[in-house]
Length: 367
Image 1 (cartoon, rainbow, N blue to C red):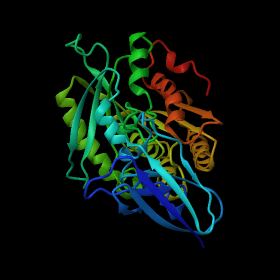
Image 2 (cartoon, helix red, strand yellow):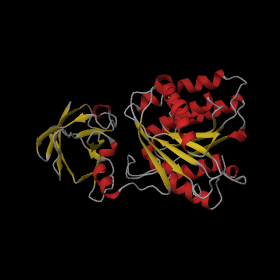
Image 3 (cartoon, rainbow, N blue to C red):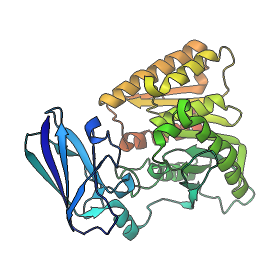
Image 4 (tube, one colour):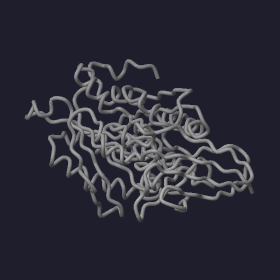
């Protein structure tokens, strides 16, 4: 074991009850769980955490106050890259924290393009945790009072529109892309419902765990609320997400084609511990294939994305073997793309075009 000490010096002292946490890329550092290792308050501005590391290989880490919305940022509110810890017996690393993401956000406010409504702390009788929901309205919504609009449901809502709430300071830019592409006539107008995740994300987005309860929340509670409150086309609904969100999007579209006409699944978690149920679901369908449209994409850089790429290609191959129509399936691979919001933001115009493109624009992209 290699023993080290991590020290955090904060520019502003934290109040009573506040806690600083360390998290990182290895299991010993919590595998990026934002509240993995609580640090000990030594004085008003100093926090310490002793570590015992099994390997001498460098590990990446970050500092938070327990959630990704409270991670450490620089003085300008930018999320820094992952810090690097090089294990050395008896070593010490000191991190200076000048600001926190939530404090910067309070000063700057949300950075979302277009008109939107925030539904705070939406509760469910199927799930234990409340979550915020953002309803984004397309250009022309107010000017066209008689028109109704299709609806896109998205997971990990804090990542969808706003870089001030997104984990790495980089959102999917769905608001910017949608507004521009709708305005220039490339896309038909549509509403986006961005549903935030909770600390139970891995459980709620896994079909074999709490995924079915999460879908009951979407279908039986949230969708009726949205359909009643806004001018939607209830029969025209799609769903999209990345990683575990991509997995639950695929599952939702396949199991509920009566509700969802399309699903965009970016870097879907078709891996053994989560995705086995989805492969079996497709195999069990026989010749009763759902009439949905599927967009699958993945990168290939980094260990995690490479693992997901293998599963994505296997799923695409299985779909073709089952006879799923090629005209309703698009697969895009970016070999150099990593598992992060920047890569998914680059993919945004492609899957938006696939789901909502006008005049054949959804079909002009190479597979």
